Image (cartoon, rainbow, N blue to C red; front, side, top):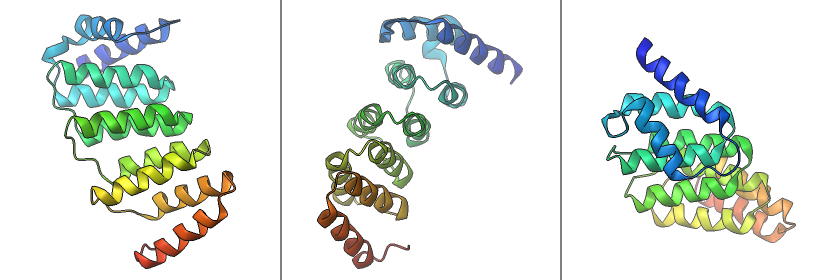
Amino acid sequence: RLRLASMVDQVLGELNKFTGHVDKARIRALLQRHLGGDALDSQQAMALLSSMKTLERTKELALVLRCLHDFGLETNMYMASVAITACKKCCDWAQAVQLLTDMVAQHVQMDTTAYSGTLCACAKRGEWTQVLSLLSEMAAREVETDTIAYSAAVSSCAKGAEWTKALGLLCGMAANEVER
């Protein structure tokens, strides 16, 4: 455990030194050097992702998640949720949507938490069309919608002055028996 913490600290230290354009090759080399790349296990990956979410560098976090997948590590909804939570905190809605899209493309079953986090990131920036699209996707994929998802959707519609859509969402919330 101490060795893992030390390796994660080394990666974070080097990530903090990155300036300018950071690409996948650079992240991949960093992971290879400090963590053995394709020798990573899920515990190491989660430790790294969890530590990275405090850096507020969502692009690098997303690149690490993509590299983990490239190394053959089975990425899962928990790993994606950590990254999406960081995006939500930083209001990086585009990165949150891309992460969610990547995970779905990798056939990772995403849950309410991952979708709600992405919806919240979009709502913070008033991206109401994206929010409504994600809410529809949740329904199509039979992912349970919760109060957080609906609140994000109503909030984003309100920011966009889309009052009719916001009211429709509130009615939909009642019709779907979502707890308020």
